[in-house]
Image (cartoon, rainbow, N blue to C red; front, side, top):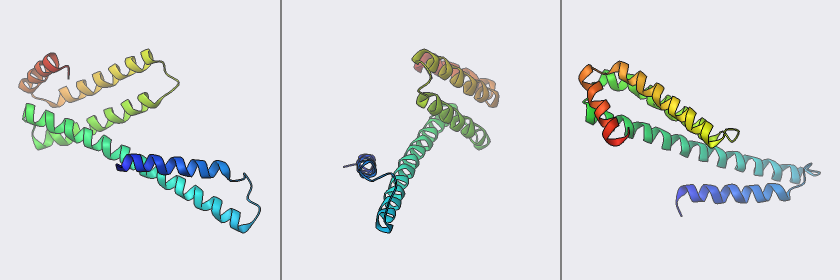
Length: 142
């Protein structure tokens, strides 16, 4: 069982335990059990969040590495582009998780987020790199 599955199973078990507990603990033992369940739930949530953050950082690093190898980025360019990619990923995640938005609204916002990131990255690139990026976009839909 992979780590993500283990976290989900643990979270579900904690949720089941919490539902079974009374809302107001009446004895010190009940209070201790309630606090332990709450701590376990918080730990599971933090672990899931950390895994998601690690996943996002890995995706940002992968995209940066791809751009770097394709466009022959300098170290200075990499340092400037990395926060742009991280911001793009964070905004995309927020839009993806926003249940108040329709699919069309999400798609529109995602296009805006990607266009903004591309524009910011384009400002950092040399004219030759900009041409190469435009070619990459046309060929691969980057």
